[in-house]
Amino acid sequence: MIKFFRKIRRNLLMENKTGTYFKYAIGEIVLVVIGILIAISINNWNETNKNEREQIVFLNNLKNDLKNDLIQLDQILKLQKEKLSTVNELKDQLLSIKDFEKIEQLFAKINTSANYTYFPNTGSYTTSVSSGKIASLNPSSLRIAITNLYERYYYRLIYNGELYDKKLNEVSSSQGKFFNTLTLKLNSKDVIEDSDFVNLITIVFLENSTYVKKGDRTKSEILKVLKLVEQRLND
View 1: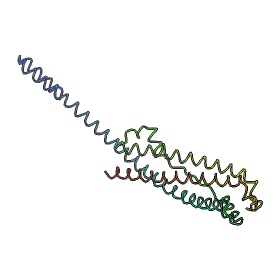
View 2: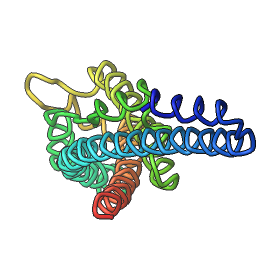
View 3: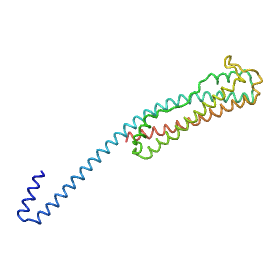
View 4: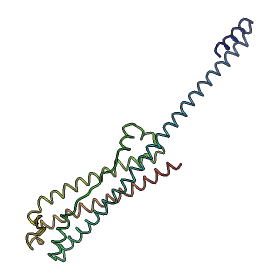
């Protein structure tokens, strides 16, 4: 093809058709420019398609992570709310009713229940951040919602869970004054009038209550992000 164009230019020059030659040369330049622009457009189209495919893969992986997170968080909140109900009943007993056997039973129940806290699946999100893919995610409202969930709500719930565990460990280490962990019995009836014992229960109640509230807010945020992700995948 190049030899063909060269032959045409040479023939035009040999025939002294200078004006025609220049017109032909300009036309050839225009064709080259058009060819370059078409190549650039094809390359951009390919890159756009590649980026879109990568976004779809990321969003599908993220969707699976969020669904698993939601299952885990629901289970943890169910257990924590049951515990909160027990602690709240114990608090009421200590402040007003003062049924010793009931107080002993409730305190034993709290001490024999595990304290489950939340740790989300962050693999897909972390990979997208480290690779820079999250920065190109569209629309921006979805990108902001995802980032907000992982960097704010998840961070705060994990941090609060760590504080919660720490407080419970402090309570556990100081409860020997009031409670025998082997027999699951309070040391004496005087315990229920001890301000230090009441303070222990108050600490557990406040930490548990705060954790449940943050967990509920996080659950709402997960559902919000899941809805946005599904809308994006269905577009």
